[in-house]
Image (cartoon, rainbow, N blue to C red; front, side, top):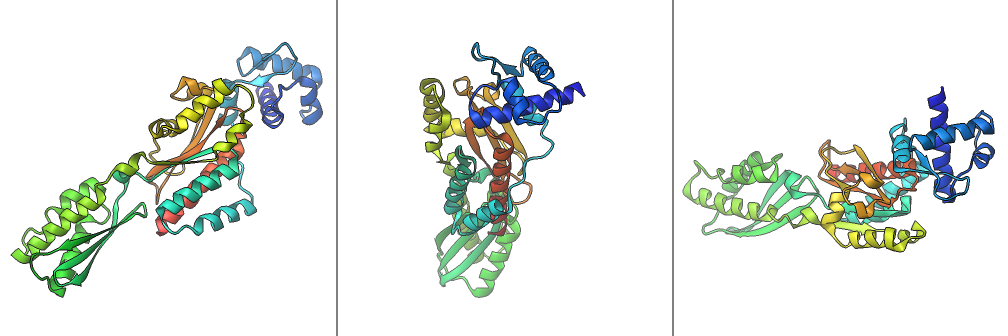
Amino acid sequence: MVEDRRLAVLRAIIEDYVSTEEPVGSKSLVERHQLGVSPATVRNDMAALEDEGFITQPHTSAGRVPTDKGYRLFVDRLTTVKPMTPAERRAIASFLDGAVDLDDVVQRSVRMLSQLTRQVAVVQYPTLSRSTVRHVELVAITPTRLLLVVILSTGRVEQRLVELPDELGEDALADLRLRMNRAAAGQLIADAGSRLADVGDGLPEATDGAARLVAAALVEAVSDHRSDERVAVGGTANLTRFGEGFDTTIRPLLEALEEHVVLLKLLGEASSAGALTVRIGHEGPYQELATTSVVATGYGPGEQALATLGIVGPTRMDYPGTMAAVRAVARYVSRILDEA
């Protein structure tokens, strides 16, 4: 019971500090929260929490603020993530459903996430190395010119024109299309390339030559890995809410926002879609960003995470609400990619 009561006191301190941005005293806790105990008991609990390193006294005043350790205990003891309201869910769905392509999905996602959390939002573009080939289409423009269309699990669509040395009949084209999809559909990019190289084996010479040209064009279409380090950032203006200490809090974060590699390391690796990661203060990879926290998750069709998205903000943040927003946006983006 003592542990549960002290956890309730810690939760109340965090909620008040996030709301008021001011150190929290025992008197205000008793007035604002129905803790069911006397002010003296609250003071004793606060003293115990301070002794254990969950809260600290920044000045000589009676107020206390949470430490990284306190935020970590609070987040770890969250039994449920605060659900989004029906209005918020409708707003996310209607905004993201209007996207016309992958770039639009990413840009809309970062804007929505920054608006919901009032933090800096970061969305990584889907990583090609983790994506699979969803479908390969071959369209005859002329008897010796083919349009190759490759659709990836990320929703990315690549098109290439392939010039053939000889004409290719309809039956041969249909057979080649079938062989291409059997070899590549569902395969990771790296595996699809090696499997496609063998598609022409055993085919007549003319079809074999066409198969090799098409396979080479397909491999070239999906081999551009520049998107692996691309990120979109939104809500930088929210940094004005950080408060005092520009040189120690805002400046390092502004510099980090210029380096995509740094942002990707901040977000971390996500191996499965839907699993939330919360890094608080000094838990992050950069000590100069020790006053910030990161809430991130993976997104992608099915269970596989193709990339990560999340927010970067002060350790003094609404963790339940932020975690709910990050998870909700990731789920909608995953659904859009799955239906693409």
